[in-house]
Amino acid sequence: MSIPFPDLETLTFEEAEPGIGILRINRPERMNSQTVEMFSEFLAAGRALRDSGLRALIVTGAGSRAFCPGFDLDEIHVIAEMGVREFLKFQETATGGIQSIRHLPFPVIAAIHGPATGGGFSLALAADIRLAAPTVKMSAAFVKVGLSCGELGTSFNLTRLVGPARAADIGFTARVVEAEEALRIGLVNAVVPSEDLLDEALAMARQIAQNSPGGVRMSKRAIQRNAEIGSYEAALELENRGQALLTRTADMPEALAAFKEKRAPVFHGN
Image (cartoon, rainbow, N blue to C red; front, side, top):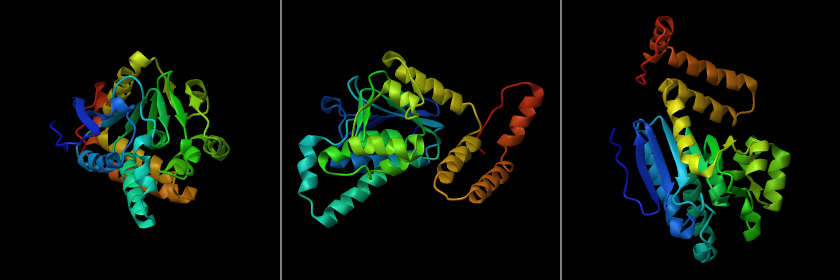
């Protein structure tokens, strides 16, 4: 498929193979640090990819040095010089950019190498699955620059991944979490050799893409939404509606027929 994608300065997109895309933060000369413009470009990328028909997206950083170490400190003066209203507008743009990646209807896999700190940490947390190289260094560094870890969805996503006590530790100290600890506490799904990181992410994306597109999308919706609601009954209601809708698609009878005929199903996403 050919996916129309805007011409961006700080991000690049490629369809690695049918149904699997790779979104790269593309400032390797600055270790892929974020800029004011980058957050707007995340929003544009999310809009372009939302209805693309992709089955999975991999988010990573260009080059071998870093995933994303957060905001480029050479641009930090721009934020400091903003008035309150201007800063709030920027903040809403920034959170909207990260949210647009988190809310993509298909799974997002973060392939993380080197530093993923500050806003880069927030981006990694916004993915559904995180694969890390042994070089990974993760940190909610916000308190080091006079801000809080209530930034770009970090306080929400981090707490739900590792629990409130560990989130408090990581958020209050701004200490670096390296690969072994990140795996042990559930901050990342797996640690793989640096040279195999993208291949492992692609292999996982292929495994996802073999399944019913509607089933995977509804699974993502259930997992995300049920992390945000306050009762078991509400979770069941959402699950029940999703399952009822999926029984009306062509993919479910195709899956049942394939099972009976002992063959691989051919899913079309409808």
